[in-house]
Image (cartoon, rainbow, N blue to C red; front, side):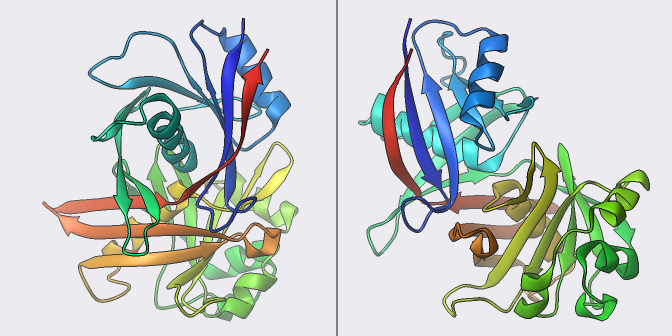
Length: 294
């Protein structure tokens, strides 16, 4: 039994940047145990499996695995899987690619920019904002001083299935110097704060971008994500709630991954709508390699 696999870079400005993803597509079922084994051996942040069950409500059945476990939702696997389906399975598709996940059906749309680049977009699940953390313990966990965190805005939890702390920083220099102190990081986790931290600054490496971000976590030996769709969705809700840019609609270019030498670009569109928020996360996808998984 063989399955096709595709490796792509998501949120990538160039090949071998962004966040890599493996997509496995087959005509025969793969057991949960073997899906987990494959994801562990590939050892990317996520591997997706398009299962060969009949389409439901026009959508492809998709499972997402990290090297350690299955997850309900993640941003770059959604965009990368839809891109692979659009380009290699249904190349003549003129409509959205629909993905059926355990959290529900996600529609991925595709846009050609004025420069001729293709961008994939998804609408993020609803994000809620929660607990606020004092600046001092968060700064200590990040190895910076408390006054380098912008006191005009809170250090706050954002949730949409998973949760992360949003930390607004005053400068790119502070963002670049952040480094997790695991002991203090674990102390925050024991207080009930999530073990994922999304940092951002309005100072950027390149003037064409609007924000620079980093995403810290502690999972399967990795402590920093080169690009994160979920983190951008959390940020979109945070920006709207706190009127960060003093406007009800924002369209942002978020640079990320420079500290791990995986320069990436996440696109964010967020607007207030119907008493809530509509948040779209997008990015480019670049193919790397394809082959057969035996």
